[in-house]
Amino acid sequence: MRYTPLVLLALVCIAALVLGVSAKWIGARHPIPESTPAGDAVSDACTPPVAAPASEPWLAGDGSAEKVWQEHSEELSKPYIQGPNGWTFWGDYVDQYASQAVGRATLTQTQISAWVSYFSTLQRDLAASGADLQIVITPSTSSVYPEELPTWMQELRGSTPADQFMSQASGLPVIDLRQKLIDAKTDDVHLFSWSNSHWTDYGGYIGWKQIADCINARHPVAAALRVPAISGHKVIGDFNEWASYGVASPGEDWAAPVFADQLEDVTYTDKSGATVTGPGSTVIDSSVLPVTTQVAASWTGKSALVVRDSMGGAISPYLDQAYSPTWQVANQFGAADPLDVRALVAQHHPGVVIIQFAERHLISPPASAGG
Image (tube, rainbow, N blue to C red; front, side, top):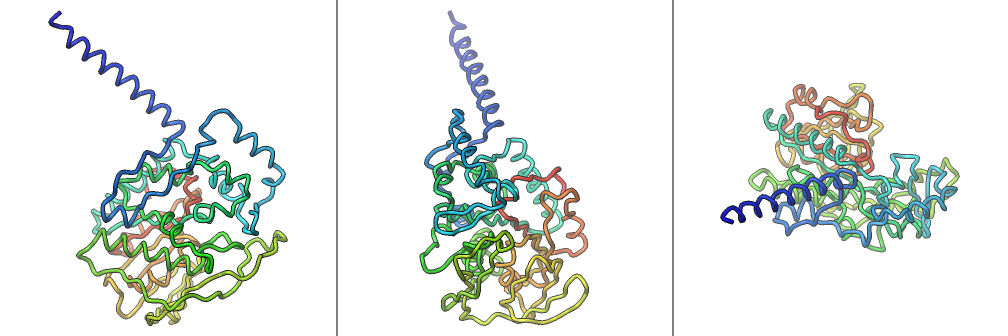
């Protein structure tokens, strides 16, 4: 009888082990975001919790969500989908965009681990080189304006690949812009365009506010990033990304900030070696990358390697003011020939490495931990 407590303890341990293995196995197939604990100043600035979906229709296992999806197969066969108010989104033609938007396309635990391993290994190696890493995930339009998706899709929304990744990225220097952009929405200005898959220049300005707050919170003793004062916004045009498909735009909605603060002129050198000097408000489109920029006196006194995509254009004016020089190059997530970030760091010796990529690229994790 004196061994009874030990026997009971052993049985409890075995039961816990079995339950733990089962939970891990289920999570490997369908990783579900864990609840986010109360944050500190850094997490509040960098990764504010995103409201959880009302339900998880794709994890229910009864097949009803997929049945509804297939009922709309003709609509989904086009490269784009349209919501009730004229907003246009990519369909699954681009990175399974529509399926990602509702959580039909998810990441396995192996894929999540590939992202975490890639960034954690890169962070460690960059720290050894004296470079600081910042990861900026720019949201999809569907994450900020889900109410503009087709009505039937809104009813199928569950956890997305972004939710999955963020649930396991607590040790990484990630900036998740979704919730603060959602909170900043108003009826008088679009942060994302109804006729383009990118955020507007004004949306980029709102995103930069959080980026600056986050990096300043992480490095409170460093020279601070700034947010230029603005007097409002203006609509500068209609950049209809789906015009070639015969899709009509509801009208001009591309909003840009009207700066009250003067931005320094920036000297730009493109891949051909041509150098020009232009206004600090200039947006650097991804089509002209790689580009080197310089200003007379940057906000931080540091240089930066910026690995970015087309979503990085809207924040490029602030990056150009914050760091000098910057070396801005296109990221290659999902490409067969991945970008060698370490080689670029060895070449340029930047003080900061900023990796910015669109949320939709999460569906294509890096093939290895190298970068």
